[in-house]
Image (cartoon, rainbow, N blue to C red; front, side, top):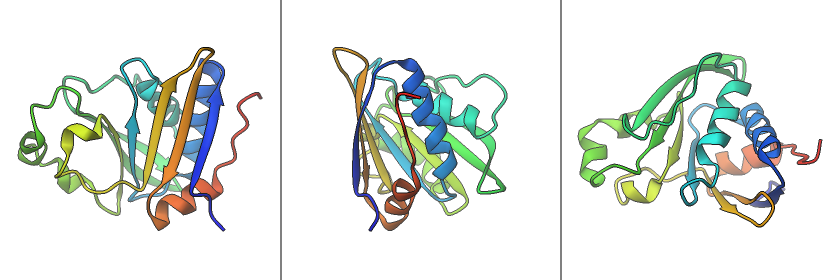
Length: 163
């Protein structure tokens, strides 16, 4: 039986980076991952670690002003485009549609979306919701699968926060 949700405590930035690296190992093309959390909760840090673990060598910048940044990485032994969206500054869902972003949600791309609530109701449904919350020591994370593809991804995830 696949995992429907995982609740984790990440005691430090290194644990957040390990989670991102471990997620990179279980992603599959066509996956949509939505990141929820307040400013500074670690959404971009998690995405940066994921992209570096998937083989991106360069800088990973927050797409706060560009709204989307594409990266070519290797996932499941093939080159895949991962698009990191940050919808925080988006004026409304029409802007998402006008930019043509919806076409990137397909079987060949992995879409990671910060602030997905800004794209409601036009944003395609996610496979995995990741909620990050600052805690007294570190941050708490919930990963929740919302599709068969999301369940399969979480079932393959092997994460040990204290390595």
